[in-house]
Length: 112
Length: 114
Image (cartoon, rainbow over all chains, first blue to last red; front, side, top):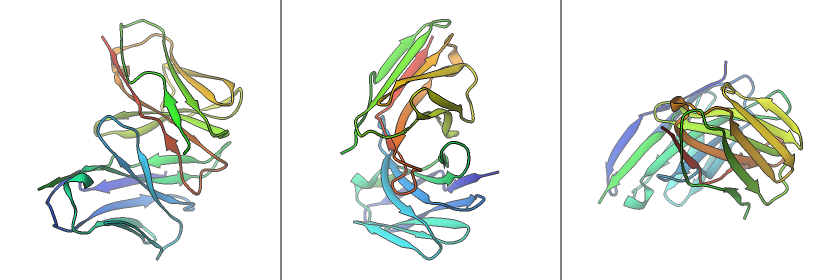
């Protein structure tokens, strides 16, 4: 069964304190691993797609990496505006169309 | 930018009411999805549609139905609302098999059933 597990559930950082969020997955045939950011009361906003082990993508202070079993979202020198819930998802193949299966997210709080 | 618009940000309904949640997308996407999001459970797929009048059940379809009469509009229907359907409901759309950008989400409808 396809499964996505994110850790930690919540993370509190001081401004400038770098860290990483983890997403481990089991899926029969990875077609894509996605990272989203979600602000309170809003829908998820797309950040990155990773397709194969060894791939990396960067956007401002965020860098996503992928291995055969997990993905990391590295946050370098975070700022308070990086506070949000970060969601990881994998694409489930099959049926009439592919479907995203989500983890439960990591709630990140960056304090000034 | 692709926009997915959900008609209501907040709704309060009574137990037993029939509830309609509406979603419209403006980029001619074939696929549309309804998720609910609950603390500790993440996003769970309720129903999706891959073409007009075509639909499939997701992981938690019980108590819900959907309607897609036009390509741009996807409605979620709670036939008889219950308190355990209090949740954040998110609509999303995608082009093709969704393998490049995943989905584009709306801002969500927070439904409270009392």
